[in-house]
Amino acid sequence: MDNIVLGIDIGTSSVKTIAVNQQGTVLSSVSEPLTVEHQQSGYSEQQPDAWVTATKANIRKLVDDPSIDHTKIEGMSFSGQMHSLVLLDEDHCPLRNAILWNDTRSTPQCETIKAHLGDYVLDNPVLEGFTLTKMLWVQQNEPDLWRKASVFLLPKDYVRFALTGQLHMEYADASSTLLLDPDTKTWDKSIGEQFGIHDIYPELVSSQQCVGTIKPNVAAELGLNDHVAVFAGGGDNAAGAVGAGVIRNGEALCSIGTSGVFLICDDEHETTYRRNIHLFQHSVDDMSYAMAVTLAAGDSLSWFKQTVLPDTSFSNIVELASQSTIGARGLVFTPYLSGERTPHGDASIRGSFIGLSHLHTSADLARAVIEGITYSLYDAIEYIRSLGKDVSHIVSIGGGAKSEFWLQLQADVFNTRVSKLKYEEGPSMGAAMIAAKGVGWFDSIEACVDTWIEYAKTFTPNQANHDNYMRYFDIYQSVYAHTRPLTKQLLQLSTAQRAEV
Image (cartoon, rainbow, N blue to C red; front, side):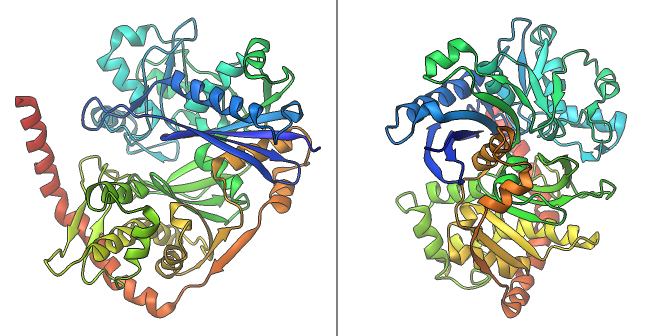
């Protein structure tokens, strides 16, 4: 029987773990749900030890699976939600809940950073999602707690520490903190020092580096051999790109999950991206990727389901949307339910339906939501094309890749070929591939991709449909400027009302 590696993804809504053999076959996939705490509007937190508990529960499920020989598990690696801040005390225990990537409380701290360093730091925009802004929020609002902090980590790094006892952060995830110098791949401590941040940096390693083995007591608890090798892994978008085979210059990915992501590999390291496009290190050596983020992509569809069609499945909602027409019969939706990151970088903007009338049906509303999510990603694609990048093929993963209707819609809106993977496991597969390379099954990540990754189908754009969509996209682009002052006033009013209660 073949040996096995585990790929573990620390997500926002769940922890997913897959067991994969040497042929790239997923032998088993398990998950454990997570909850998010929202103490106030804009706040988003999780308990770090909940990730550890869920990870251990998943591993125990796999060990107990009679179809898997758990003695053959020889390696594991991780992916995880990016940016989210974990602070540990001198005993390496969490000081507070993790402040998550989609938490938007740190707008004042963003303004402080911009006043000192400008709108972009180390090739990345200063936005509420980034880790440095969260560190400043804790420093300014919880100073007693901040003084106890000895090291900061990101989610997957904390789980890996809990299993191995080793403190590390890898370059791909570290580049999402606003503190990693991409040229030297070292912490730019001069940035932190300007804001009173000293000596809380973990050791940096590459995504593919072995950082140790499972602690003997943890291995015994989980039923694993204590020689299982553990590899650093990557942030969920870097690992997701590996798991989709998007690892070479110019290759592109669209991922529609809770958030929406468009990324393109870039080995030039010199392109100046703006409009809130991020530039991060990839989990593949000497490769970067440019990334755009829509904060509430699939989350917008979840909101629509819960609010309008609670008894209808997601697949049936997408099928319902297909019964409407391009442009949803004159209805445009902007997916700004949590503010927006790319291209606007605005925590105060909120979503809207424009053009709503008594003639519109639930099918039209569903289609408008799906089109609005897709437009938000196309906005970034067009900007990246304007910089001379060739976006001629995109691999689509996540909820947007579960429907042929939505895949064709992406191809038509993006005006490019869009491929669906034959087997999609998301970032957990990327983590498994990093482990597979690490234990010696392949000489490189590229060799693993060439062996394991296959497309199920490729969708070609319809030019007439694209031209039709662009008439509505032009309106979509103009909605932000017209609604921004209104939604800001509404947010101020609702905040004041909550304060009065």
